[in-house]
Amino acid sequence: MDRNAVRRAWDAVAETYAARRDPDGSDAALIDDLCDALADDSGGGDGDPLVLDVGCGDGARTLANLPPGSVGLDVSRRGLELAADTVPDARLVHGEMSALPFAADRFDAITAYHAVFHVERERHPAVYAEFARALRPGGRLLMTLPSGRFETVRRGWMGGEMFFSAPGRERTLDQLRAAGFADVETRTATDPLGSSTEFALATLAGEPDETRTAP
Image 1 (cartoon, rainbow, N blue to C red):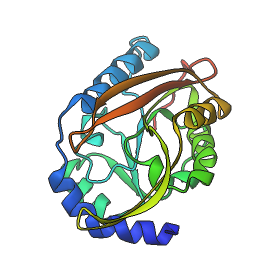
Image 2: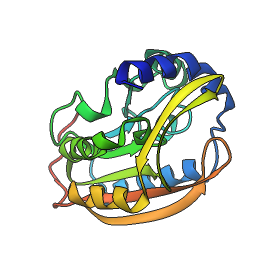
Image 3: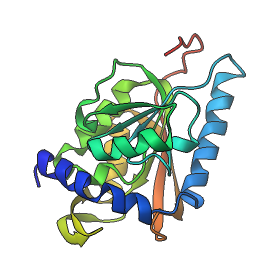
């Protein structure tokens, strides 16, 4: 599926996906750990950390649990409409993760739950390069780690169809390191549909900027 087809597919299934997802669970709890780490990074400084949720969808699973003022990005306008109701105080942006519409060194952290594997695996290095560009030095990444190598269109998924693509677990970890992410840690948690999923937590190389400016 090309990018426009993926966008249309998400528009078609956005409501069903939101209705079937469990907004709680251990993968949601990982966000608490991320927020604790960001608080430690700030050293008790003023202001909330600025977090970008890539592939935010309706916002219930991740964006709603992030610090106030966080930003949600999605390729689906219907998903963003749902997120506007779920997280009315968030800034919502329509765009693609392989070309983030933000300045460099903008965010303290990026979350990408069940998102990157909807992009062709050949473009994953470009996605991770964009994550690194948009993060401040020392910024953090929390994302789903695909367990295998695949590229397929699942017919009947959520009543529609959806594209999935990944180069494999080890290749993904190598790509993250190549993009400048260090201290990559993996954890297993339950995903929104009740399955067990592995997640990667990583830190962008470089010292955190203690003179963070307001967004």
